[in-house]
Image (cartoon, rainbow, N blue to C red; front, top):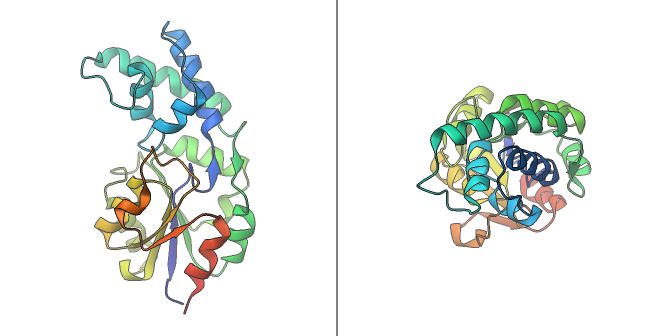
Length: 221
């Protein structure tokens, strides 16, 4: 096969987890007497880790306010962690065909590479019965977050796979930029959390609309 390993983003690629995040965000904002935000806004802010998400919530905008108080942000992040820990996985769902697709790719070593913290990643994967599909899980608090290539390079080293023989599957600019920097091919999925970006602009090797569309890409000779 063309690829010896497949790396998967989590939120927006395998799992639609935005409702968990939306609930935790608004509980946090309510604790701090800040205006609550819509689910659509939260969805548009996902993709750069929880710290960035919370700061966007406090700012009420994708662009984090330059006047945001760091002590307030730290308190909000800690509150968010507490709320999210209570709900993670409760309202999340696999995207269509994810389970079928992962089972069909049983012969390829697979890695989750996410900007989510490990404590939440492992809980989410366990609740959705995904853990057994993956040989390795690389999280946002293990090392630099995507769009840094570091987690992808690390995964290649751990699996003893050349970057040229690995492929990244993700739904955002961060996934594509990380893959490009790591010299790993990338499959962009159009259905996830793309922060309003047109993923075609970042020149992914492949663009798929459905999770099952990745199977012929990954199994080609």
